[in-house]
Length: 260
Image (tube, rainbow, N blue to C red; front, top):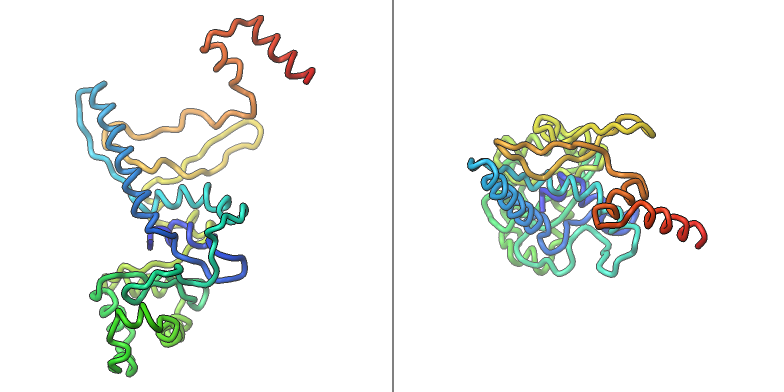
């Protein structure tokens, strides 16, 4: 879920003008697993051709950065029936925290089912007096019965800090919380840049543009973009020709299409 926040997917989920939401049903974990399986299959195919195995590296944040740039706008624009409002996945229940909350300059994803990150987070905040109240030591009750009440206690501390400051705080204390990044922030992410996630593609009509790269990294056969995506109908003759259509048949099909 934090990978969804860092990959720019969470920022577009929910209603416009309201706080972002975690992706439903732990989608980042499933999508990371699916891409890991696909990467493994590709590596097996490469082994059949080359006789060599290789290491497959799949980062869930990169998977979500790729999906966030492609599928999330569809999620927002089409009005799909599972869109929700607010800042918490509906019916999330379970242990607190499970929310995306505002910071000084954005939003932060605080989600964990384990008590250790939550304790380290409270330690990093200086263990405010309210944390010693038994009411706020029962994570199950907080998550199930009064999560908004606890949110109201946490938000003032988040509002005092930028998302970058909170991220650095979490890094120092080994807390797996993450900032909610916009598409622009994902594009400037130093980690994604260092991993060469983005690729440059040039085409005559528009020049050179930057795109998300592949979700898999192979130690022996790295992914390469050989050509830009085709324009509408650019490869129609090539595809139909490989399917057995003659030049005369292709000309006839084009003529019929123009008449229609």
